[in-house]
View (cartoon, rainbow, N blue to C red):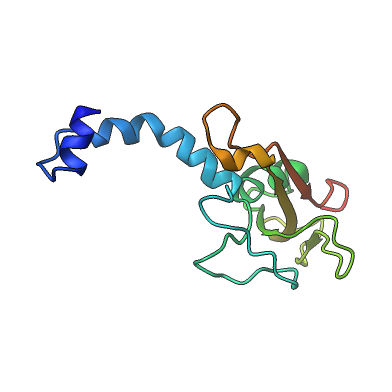
Length: 154
């Protein structure tokens, strides 16, 4: 703490090893980005199925792009086939309009090198006590609601 006050309040030369802190916290920061943590960027929650690319809000959770939908979709035929997902933050309980996952691709069973484009919908749920940030309650989402395309649909 003395080094922190010396550097921040008195403006003295840095004596704190910031690199070590970044190395120790990098896993936590990476997890927050994958989750789409609302305190890093608030969710976009746009009326259209595909949220706009906006630097002030989060488009969707990268977790669903990298892991959830590709795992749910399973292995596609052919060595060059893969699933490319676009996750979008929406309130999953909204009924007008209803946001559902979809597949935007013309791949068929005989394709050997196909890129299947999918769209998923997700919403992170946070407890009200998370906003206090006392260190006593977890700050991560307690639930990540997601609408994915099933393996059968893929």
